[in-house]
Length: 213
Image 1 (cartoon, rainbow, N blue to C red):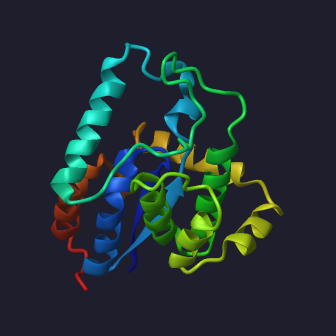
Image 2: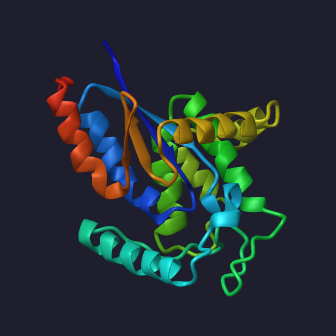
């Protein structure tokens, strides 16, 4: 029997970036499939509830993500450009979002090709790893290539269907599992929310007897 873990994941979430090495290790250590299920950032899919309680939450996330990255020995910097076009003073979200819809489309296509986690790892390291202009030149193409994929070929494939159908299904599945934020890992219907819940998820895999590799 093949066990599987669904990972609800966002290109704009620093914690989604920080979890990617652990997702690869899960596959290395356990006989499981890890399925990337990309969702839109909450800034787009639920902007009416984003940071409605003031600036304390975004300020904390910035501090905590940097601290967590240092703890994990990973580089982190605010993306340049931000995957979401947003006024960080007013928190207003722009109507036109050229970056995030391109990225989520790549996430959907990579998952269809069985390379979702690989793409998430390499592209999020490009976006969050401290290099400015991640969308310039061939940087994105090179990151996609590291995942064993071809950017031009993927974007040609994406043009033949609407990836938002998959995205909306992923978002509905996240809600159905009792989740709201990312990253959320779901195993046998049980959600594990947050990058720091990987150890708990590993404990659960061991407890139910998922074979190790």
